[in-house]
Image 1 (spheres, rainbow, N blue to C red):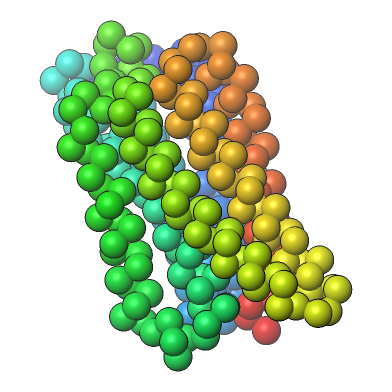
Image 2 (spheres, helix red, strand yellow):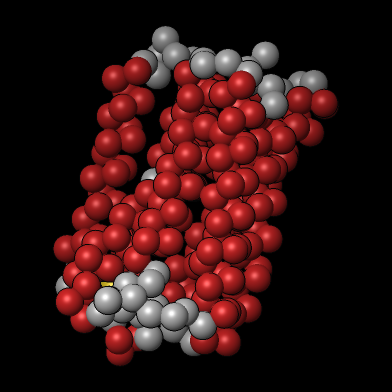
Amino acid sequence: MGLYQMDPARFLQIYVLQGAICVFFLILAYFILKRGKQRLNLILSGSYITIAAGLSLNFIYAPMTHPQLELIVLILYYLVIFLVFLYPAFLLVFVLILLKSEKIITTSKQIIIILVYAVILSFMVFIPNGVVINKSTDWKPVWSWPYFIYVIAVVTFGFLTSFYFSVKIYKLFEDEQIRKKWRYFLIGLIGLYIFATGTLLSNTLNIQTIRNIWSVISFALVIISPYSVYKGVGKQIGD
């Protein structure tokens, strides 16, 4: 009732590929927390856990195709977008602490930064017909251009700000080994931004061929980029 038999390609994309991504993110979060419960560890691991939580909601709404469930599907999808693209806020707090220290970027400031970003991102739900996901779209999310422009603007601001401060940190390092590790972090940031942009654009263009191609590319990006971030800083911050 209200459920349907998914085609193999959609089942593979949601339950296998995205399932693997969720597990991978949780493993990275576990390894970071295993090194200690310092604030930096909590923030970086929290960002991975938030993304995993967001993607896991896809498992719930994907089989729902009854017209009476359309609103629930839309709400769950908005939650997916909110949780997945909250990531830049965590990154910004992370790099600011590294650059300024926790004495300057206090706990209250960290919370404020994340909350302000979260509130601005959540305004996406007020864009009329921002996302359509129902029988007419074959229960795949289709974005309007105003919705795309708003979300990509918020995400871009978060990533560019994080990248700017990350470059400032990189310039402070004199040890080449540390600079090399930090380059992994910068590469990871770029990869995550490309993943975000490509995913949002794919949903907006709504061309099945592009969706299929991007699903393969994005899977590689969403594995390599977070690991690059972890390799650059996650292995060291607990020491």
